[in-house]
Length: 277
Image (tube, rainbow, N blue to C red; front, side):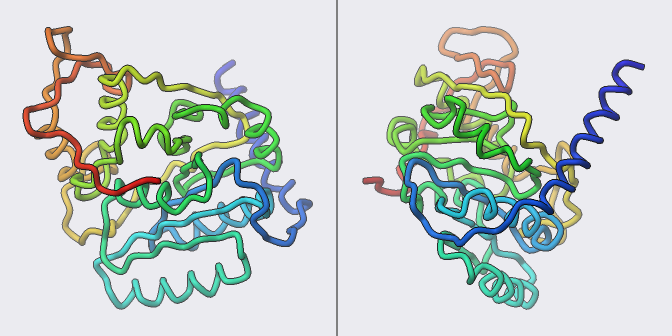
């Protein structure tokens, strides 16, 4: 009964949040602060019902902040071409927005790397587009210690995380040998753990995921799905790259996200994909 009441109150709170956005005005967009950038990944199937609402919330709260969007390609080239044209027109009024768009499908690792590469700032808050924020999200963000972190998760989720260029220099890029989507976070946490770099965690009330299960993917009509929404191709590469053990073993390192121990297989070091000044 108590859990049910909490869930009702939680849903009521977010209904009130949606209403409150009607009273938040748009301000002129211009990049004035460089302490951090915000990056968003998206693709055609999420453009109308997820990306647009989330983006419009962001531009209201962050008119002076660089927003970087990496838009993935799609196997349906005709549909993708129209989508790219529509997105460029939609984003044109916002000078603080940088769009990196692909016609052909790319890995999520590459999309994340491009957000870092195109950031004016030393830190990037990277977000999925299937999120919702409250009008107090910026206040919550800037009055936390998250923006002083090297790498940190919000609400223990890689749907919204901060990474610094210093971390990229120390740990390396997200591994673009993962061909599609899934397991990139497990790979990066494994590398962080081996390097002895601590991940930080912050709890924010003003952001939540909109739970969605993709019906289609950028990569093709017949893709093998695991764990409801990730692709088997990435899991196969992860298993090629790492040895995993449920118990502690010599040469293995414990990884939080896996709740297991890993060891990098010989010859599977992550390539240095880009130079970072």
